[in-house]
Amino acid sequence: MKIVIFGGTTEGRELSHALAKQGVAVTVCVATDYGREEQGEAEGVTVLTGRRSEGEKLSLLRDADLCVDATHPYATGITESVKAACKTANVPYRRLLRAADGTAEYLTVADAAEAAEFLKGTAGNVLLTTGAKELGVFAVLDTTRLYARVLPSRESIAACEAAGIPHRNIIAMQGPFTEELNAALLRQLDAKYLVTKDGGAAGGFPEKARAAKKCGATLVVLRRPEETGETMETLLREIEEMKPCK
Image 1: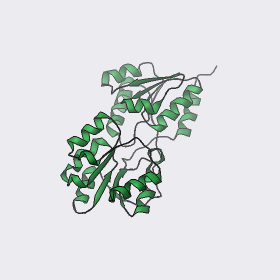
Image 2: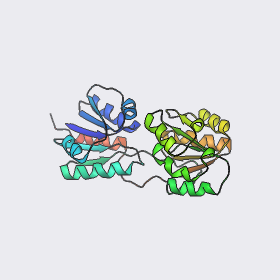
Image 3: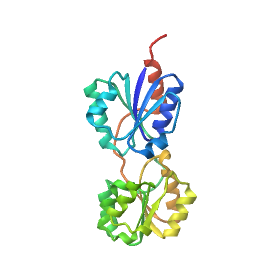
Image 4: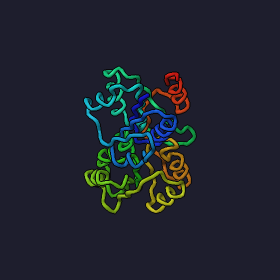
């Protein structure tokens, strides 16, 4: 049995390792070197690094029994491209869900643009933890009040520079982070706002929410795109049923 996973997330790593232990041939596609580091090494798991063209996706899916989309909940563009490739290749597609956080209190905005528009009418420092891709949207603000926490990669630093974030305001660190570290950072920066995504427990969202509440900072969350899919338990059970009888 051959399964292709588009991953780069905690749940993608966990699924691939669980399947490999069951003797399933697993190929995991990750977009970046960071994703490869997160995926790690495991016997029976082949990891491919780099963004795939449509043709490359089709070639990869050839003879696959199943494709699992375990990409980030906010990576909607990748999800749509994987769905399309599976449809063309006539390979079953499954979406592995990441549970959202339903306990924290926060201000929800549609996207980074709405968050930037909201912040225009405020004062005080802002800690941005949405990732490097959205930073350009916040360039409409006074960038001296913006502090960007991004991955320690050339691409992330370049995105900060392109957005006009002062070098002294760039925090290049790899998470997830504890509540204590988030709180210490908010206090150190005297940040009145923390902007983030609901990455669930795997993305350290609860720790961010608790730290913001503890420090009296307003938590601004980019709304998670709506999606349907399956939990890890349901998917593992379904794959077990798909295995050919010995």
